[in-house]
Image (cartoon, rainbow, N blue to C red; front, side):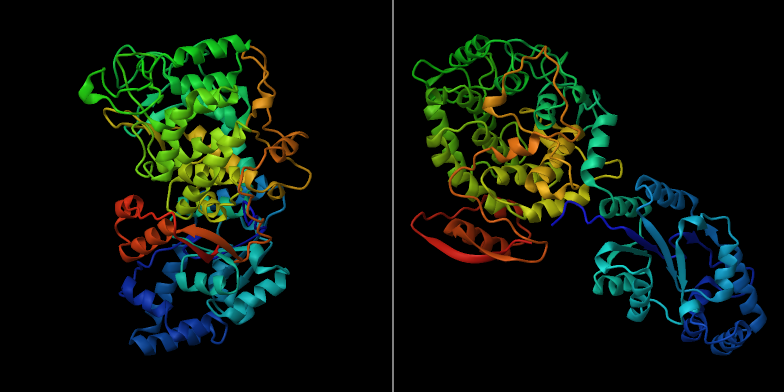
Length: 599
């Protein structure tokens, strides 16, 4: 499967797609009757050139008990109401210009010779069409398959390279039955988005979106409030390696989530371990002593016996969560979140100090094994956030023990989420997490690609939320950066010949630069990225084989009894999303060997 079908030929219907008209006439013929006339057998034969204009009007008048003169006048009024959709035609013209002359455009219309002659006199952009096929000209009409086959033969095109746009679903169905990409023209904005998906390169469009908004990729809440914060900026930087895209407040020691004054929370807001862990890894401060001093400070935020409490120390509130570190550098804000714990673990393992958090690792593994993450966490909205940051932990360390414990559980968790509906961020995170453990999440990528907006970006999606109020926060820049990363890392061959993957996640060995030093953008093709991507070690178990083509290919996978039981339950109760994500049946002694379709 390619990241975009990259169709090179567009075929448009004329009436009700590129032109609009009105069935209201100056005659006694009602709009309903006029539409019935235009759907009659007589009219269809007339559109194929089997009757003259006068003969058609006479036969229609006889069939509908009308005066032939009124029929003629009604058709004349309808012709005069015909108007080109200048805005949509301009879009088609601009799309052709953007593709630098590689896009061929045709029209295919059920219309009589006189009606087409009138249309050609309208001030439309007729120059964009290489050829216009009319039913009167070829003696066939849609949805006749012969008409589609005739056009394909005339333009010398494979069906898979063609996009057909029509307002009638029966015509689209006929086109799709031949392998043509069909779009029902029901909403101009949706059609424009679909056309860009089928025609344009999603990576180049996404890069253009990010570069156009460089330095202004701010987060926003589900209430529409902008939230200037550091965390997503750091994640965008990690995904793109382009410092010019982001705008954050640099901290040489511990990091704060907000850039300035806190929003939707207390007036004073302490530094947090989540942003600090990401910040220290992404910005590479001068000297390891800075990083290690912060890590030493993190170790202080547990009780004396290594137990962290959710509330201030009191025997009735103590939870036996050994070495699970709080979210904030503040003993009065004792909060825990497994995603925060994962990011702290990633920092420690990247610096060779993972063994100091062995009990925190055991807690995270328990969450993964028992699917405690399925409904999200205190601060993170989706299950995919947990899986993604768990994969980030694997990606940033070569510790064999960690890989042996975490990779199999993570792989099973990702397989269970394969194909589950999700927003653009969840799908991107799922694809990226799967890549780390050797899974090619083709189905999820197929769901992600059409979600790209007309401007090249993806919608923000909600990555995290305020723990107390539940207000959600998302960032279009982050969703777009991770979506582009998901597209490129899944298969290097998807890019144009001679180009390279433009993104690279930092590895422990590459973290040598300090924040004040300028970073070289990798948003343009470079010669080293594909080599660095291929150098990332695959954890055990070994990766699944690469699927050779977009065809439906069967391959074998091993699923646990838990996976099978959950699937049966979801089938029996399809409307119970919470039950589907929460109901767990586990028996480690059972297993099943089944074949699944990965298409």
